[in-house]
Amino acid sequence: MIIAITGTPGTGKTSVCKALGLEFMDLNKVVEEEGFYTGVDNERGCLIADLDKVEEYVRHEEKGMVVVESHLAHFLKPDVTVVLRANPLLLADRLKQKGFSAQKIKENVEAETLDVILAEAVERCEIVYEVDTSGKSIEEVASTVREIIDVEMEGKKEGKTVEETRDKYKPGSVDWTCHLTVTMKNHKS
Ligand SMILES: Nc1ncnc2c1ncn2[C@@H]1O[C@H](COP(=O)(O)OP(=O)(O)O)[C@@H](O)[C@H]1O
Ligand SMILES: [Mg+2]
Image (cartoon, rainbow, N blue to C red; front, top):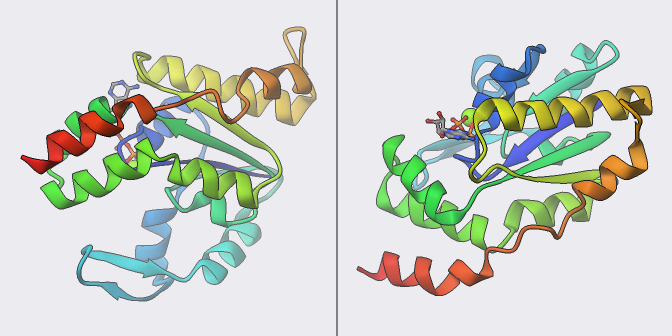
């Protein structure tokens, strides 16, 4: 079973996976370390991942269950996909602190506001959870992700069924469109 933790950069994928207490694969590291890329995107300053090779590698390493995290994780035909979301204003602050360029912050904040990764995940993956991380600590988000993984693996967890859990975090619960004008205005200046 492949469990994908995806989301716009800055939504907390790596931090949350570290707090899960489970082994996980950081796909960005796999791409770089294993040389699974077809080229370099000079404009964005990142590698162009060879997703077929990454998928083959992940399936080979799977051994029952594997958690993979990356903003590309939902492209690996995962069994379960968890999309982390964050309020665009919060995301802008986090990316600024991470040292992202103004252009990269703008791109990611707009992608988050417009649900780009959620839409990609829903289009490709059968089982998608949407988790709003805004106002929650890394540990709180990790506990929610753990609850999702446990219930998907075991069918039931602490009286909650898979159906109830999927319903609780079903896609469409987050709506950042109210931030559209704010984000556009912010980035004009
Ligand atoms: N729920 C959260 N609350 C507060 N800060 C967070 C939270 N999740 C992530 N962060 C912070 O935001 C930054 C980006 O997190 P990171 O895990 O690197 O995101 P990603 O892997 O999705 O790009 C880090 O500085 C991290 O400490
Ligand atoms: Mg990361």
